[in-house]
Length: 426
Ligand SMILES: *Cc1c(COP(=O)(O)O)cnc(C)c1O
Image 1 (cartoon, rainbow, N blue to C red):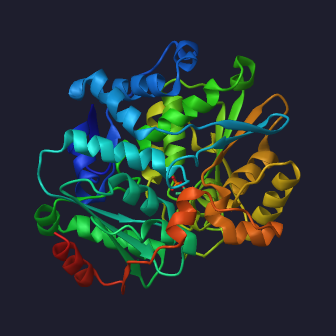
Image 2: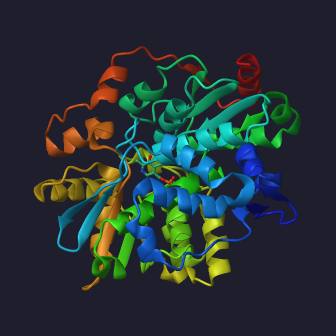
């Protein structure tokens, strides 16, 4: 697999390099130079999740890893299902929260950890990542206890749910968590700064597990195929997919699935009031505002770092950006959709509800709608209980971690202090 840096096209790397490096020069994202295209989609969809995913990823990775090696990575990474649930006529939920940390990021985080171990050259590795909540948990659990890998996770202090925090800030060992006195964009900026510091990067073997790492997006491609595989051929013919978006990695993966041949009619980019992308699609102007805290905090991102990949893909495929649906949803509206879904017999948290609402507004007769449920409702228990006046039970992993002590340290938005931590954990 060859990939190039979107900002500096002359930088070309292999899959292994892209996974180890995360980000290219000048903070450029890596993008595949060539995308395979599957002709026999029905045949592919007839296979089981693991075999099909191994085929897709093997076709992408090419001869750098044997098909058997890729299959082993997939078997280790995808140990949980991605079922669809019918919510009402024409409308399905894709449940991506059956992994160990109850959010879709388990797919990408675990596949990345497996890939990194497979392509490692034995050198020191420090994973530095910023999280708006769910990436941190997925990455921490995926890398927990792995040899020669230290993990440093930054998150905005007080801006993620207490349960989310408990899930990944209680592990210890090679997992180091840092609460930053600022917002998610500041955390993301600190990570980028660290990557720009070439000396530091080499010294600690810096790598990011953010969705800027291509391996995460590659893993996520697979569950779009898995969703279509669970529908009848007639249903998947006119499929519209609504993706609750923050950094836009999930949507990028879906659009990559389409580029590989999966027949998806169109996508909807659904956001909360941090609506840089919907406004951009409306006006053509990229004008990020200050990030606003919402009840769908994993999407509280005003400078989505995967957006350049979507533009690149659309350019290559000749897809006009105007074909992308869009919608920005307020907290009140998402709460109303959580209630509406509950009345339909489906328990959903605000991220999924945002995708559901936007889908409902744009689905046409004869189309099948799919909205992505990116987190387990219990992961946002406080919000869901308040909206529905319920007391939903905590699933096993959350119940266990909610009893454990937080191990995070608190830091100001200060790059020098972060550098000291990166050196200390070695
Ligand atoms: C990360 C996350 C999102 C946003 O996904 P992106 O790939 O960053 O667009 C949506 N919902 C939940 C629950 C998440 O954890």
